[in-house]
Length: 317
Ligand SMILES: [Zn+2]
Image (cartoon, rainbow, N blue to C red; front, side, top):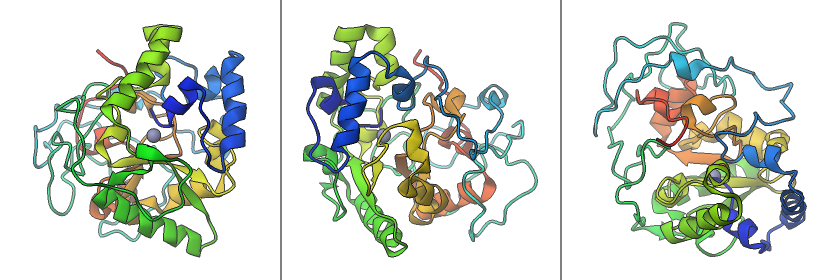
């Protein structure tokens, strides 16, 4: 889902600074021992990532089951759902910020309206489009009309270095802010076309079968990377790219604490895979706009599914 599966699947190597670790990771995969690490990327069947972070908040699993399954409003303002069961503040990752909304001690209704202009949850050109294992892109072969290459440090090439123009501008600001604080971040994987995702997923199906492929790569039309609103970051050191250990790298720590100020959320937080369908990916950021991202952070809401009152999407159906 998150990393440049295509490179790995066909054995190519990125020329980025993280090549050594990616080569090592590939070797692990080839040795058949890489599932635990891989599971951190896009699994819905693999075990919880090993190396559970002692410093991680460790929210209680199972919040997905407690989450109301209100169906989203098709577009525009999120649906209200007064019957919402309070959801624990699971994404303690992000401290309350100086957002317009003070942190609320009370439970946050999952579908509370976000501040600011409202956007569609289904239109792939909308910053609030929700793509998960229940919600494929429509059209499936969508191509963002405004792909650009952001002026940031790249650890990839080709289409993976592209983002939609809004996301690219926000990424440039965020990378610059991180750098000003001494944290070097790289763009490790951005846009991924339907064709690339088809080839990537197909190669996994061919070599491992469909069930296992679904633990390693999003199905074509189901990847947030195809929207242009999401990208994976790497650390300037190149270390621990796309592995569970990445969470301890400066880039990941900084992003977790600050990304919301630039309109991003860590899309697949720790232990919320019953809702998102993906294990913790401290490298995968998703743009939703500064108001909504700050609001989510201030209210301690970890997933877009909860924030917009959508049903959990733990697996394909
Ligand atoms: Zn990703």
